[in-house]
Length: 134
Image (cartoon, rainbow, N blue to C red; front, side, top):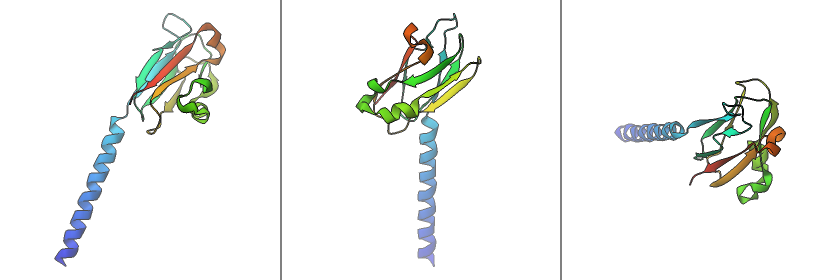
C-alpha cells in the first residue's frame, strides 16, 4: 500500500510541476499595440517596425484616418509561407476609431521579418514590419 501511495505522490508532483511550467510559458507571452494612423493623422503604422517573440500577440487599433486593414505580404514571407500570410492578415476594413484586430503569432513561427500593409493606403506608404526574434 505504501508503494502505491508513493507512486501517486510522485505522479501528482509531476503533474503540478507540468501545470506550473505551462502557466509560466503562457505568462511570458506579451501583447503589443500598433496604431493604424499616427496621432498627427499620417497614413502610417505606429510603430512601423515591431520586434516580438513567437507566441506574442499584436493588436492593431484604428487611431486616425480610417478605414484601415492589415494584410501580410505573401511575396515577403520568411520561408515563402503564403498560407501563413493569409492566416495573419485581416482584410476586412475597420472604420471606427478604437476598433481593432488581434493576431497571435504561433509559438513555432520562423524567425524573420514579416511585412504587412494597409490595402487602401499601401500606395501612400502605410507599410509595417513584425520582426520575430530567435
